[in-house]
Structure formats: structure tokens, C-alpha cells
Image (cartoon, rainbow, N blue to C red):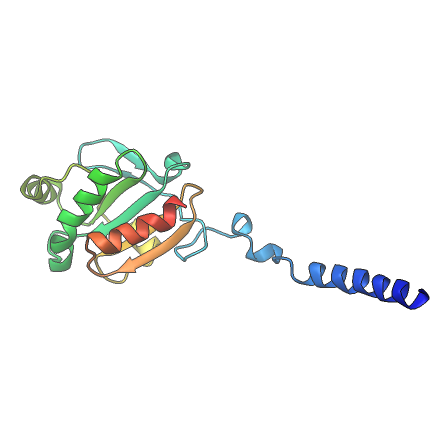
Length: 174
């Protein structure tokens, strides 16, 4: 019987050590990470004027997942994905905030595209590309999928279709 007590105590000790060693390190926890444009990190906050003269601040949308799409009118793949982005906005209107971020173009040029493609989601004007630079956007279109806690859960570089958009939205609605 004494041998079984000894084995039981060993299991308790090694089990406790194993639990302690397998815990998630404090630095790996999302809440303690510095905002940066990377999966698993909080999205950097920004404020931009929208095409309709309002203001869009990312932090104000905490609690709501956000699809952040960097684009420009001169970008062919951006033009090709606009109908899919609009369809995603229409489908998830009450669940997800879709925001287009136009890169350094004149508002009248962008307004013509909004009218031509019948876009109804907000378009923020990144007139100096400061936000795109802060998000390390190297090519367009680039899209960040940000969950309700403000953490980037998925990124997509290049043209998207309805399926790739739906996959990204699914990752931030969990």
C-alpha cells in the first residue's frame, strides 16, 4: 500500500509541474501584445475621414468585427473585387463592419467609382497613405479581418471573391 501512495504523490507532483510548464506564456497572450499589423495582434488604431465627410475610428468599432480593405481606383484587382466586397457588406450588415480604405486619391475620382460600382459601404480616404504605411500594405488590394476584440485574425493580399471574403468573415465571427 505504501508503494501506491508514493506513486500517487509522484503523479500529483509531475502533473502539477506539467500544468505549470504548459500554460500559455504571458507574452503570447493577445491582451498583452503591442498593436501591429500581424495575425494574433491588436489592429493599430486610426481615424480617417470618409468619402461622405464623416469620420471613421477603428477603436470605436470594438465589439463589432471589421473587414478593413485597402484599395485604389487604378488597381485592376481592386476593381474586380469591389462587387464581392459590396455583397459581403450587404450580407453581413448587422454583424460585421466593412470599410474600404482608398489610397491617396482625389475624392472626386473615388466618388465616381463608388457611383459606378454602386458601393454602399463606407470608404475612408487615406490621402497621404499614412494608415496603409502603418499597416505595412505593400500591394493592393490587401484586406485585414479584425475580430470584435480588435485582434487581427486573418489577412488576405490580392484579389478576393465572395468565397475568400466569407472565409475571412467566418474567422472573425467566432
